[in-house]
Image (tube, helix red, strand yellow):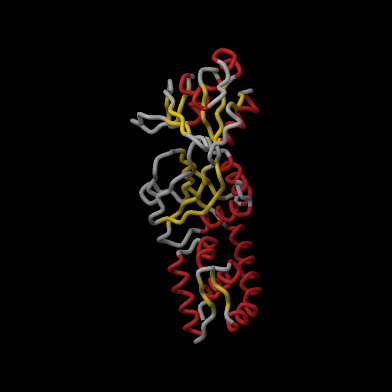
Length: 286
């Protein structure tokens, strides 16, 4: 009997479905299904009843689970203990600009694994994890998930901020449409020609005086009192606290965007990747 197959079986029972076990373990669902079949074939019995709602153990499956789950959990704890003592190398992460919750996770990771070096690439472009040598990519919004596994990290909202000096000069917008006639700076891809700021019930077209794909550059204009700026809520809160910026249009809801951790699905995650994913799961961003 394959011990790894037993581990997968225990994970399915504990999470309630093959898909949930796949997300928890970072193992493709096709692999889990195949290995479950191997385990049932080796024992010559059906272990799980599968339905659209999930997977429940059969009587034989429940008996097997009760016999092995404590040993599997104890083995995992022992592995984690020895792994944390010897984990080393370089973890390469790619993330977008201005997403401060990630820094806390990296700091916690390095405190737990002091022999691991972390390199963080800041970019908003779509990266090729293999070509760019990236272990984990942090991205928000719509995803291209071909050949990768996506794990939910949290959510990022948006806020529009401005310096009090600018508000005194041009006035405080009362409605989203007012932004069309006010100086704004906006995040943009190279060559982008139209710019809209999204609210829950409408999208407002703006004419930015400056564009960039770097949030810190855009924030400079806001701090200098030159323009209104749309930023992630985490970054905006930091600027409000440290630089006295003010949030505007607070009565108009703005959408929140899911943030995911992406890593390759074709191969089993490395010990570094699994360790970082575990820390993110322990301390969810949101």
